[in-house]
Length: 372
Ligand code: PHE
Image (tube, rainbow, N blue to C red; front, side, top):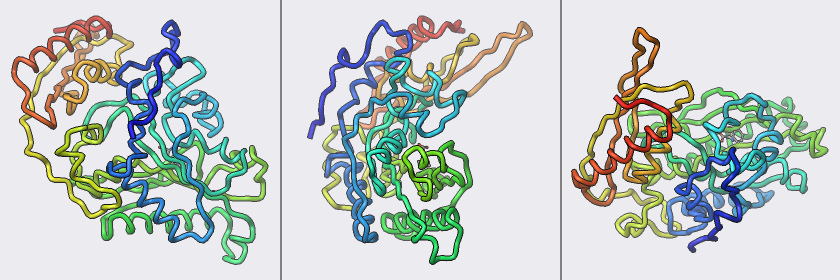
């Protein structure tokens, strides 16, 4: 399945000052990796469906082709994201225009599905976030949202209060899912905050000597249920990061690989095969390049990373700040180390020098910084 192609001009008005969707991102719309049964993202989605099918008598409805282009109301207001929350900024979210965004989470569909009368559902799709660059972050990734509404008869016989009942059911459900996918794996719950749930939790899994956050969840804020006339109910919700679950499950070391057409990657996975461990096709050498500049007030790391990604595409593996200082005149200098590495071949010096020189030009032209 190639997915549906979406023409940029049908969606983006070039002259809108709010539009910050570059072509590199735009070209990912409609790829629908989650609908490819032999792709790790599709395999893991199907395994999660299977878990819900076999463990719940009451079925969860599934949605997987809701458009990723949503209104700011769907993405933020409907799930109670405060007006001044950072996730609303142009630095964090891709805006098509001032009222339209590329969804930054599948939670953008909670309210509309509730309003349409759905009570237990799973929503899978591509989500978009401006972010820094490393092996677990990519500006497009996939999430699965789960949502489950309970009625008084569900918690009454348990003798527990409704919120506690939902929170316990939620954790049991997700721990069961983690065991279904991974067998014995080290995991831990961390308390956190989301505008749309209270209490809220994150599940972290131990991977490559570190704790990796793989999902957020919690008991849905009563106001969200009320908007759909569900005053007397309680609900839980979760949002899973499918790439991260797939990285742990298949031992995939770098998130860029999900976008690779290289046969040496794609041929390692098969429909329904959960036991596969990815065998890297030899690691090609990295090439490090540093860049230093005086930043201006408007400088952000996300903007810098987008420039680098716009030029080097998937040849950039990581961007990290390695030095920062402010001089007596109050000017601040940043030094970033860019790691170039292809997952498919060795890069030549010439090629990397050329990329780096383009990065230098573009950074100066677009970001209002002074190269050192
Ligand atoms: N939308 C949250 C995120 O993307 C995850 C989440 C979903 C948290 C549902 C709670 C409930 O980080």
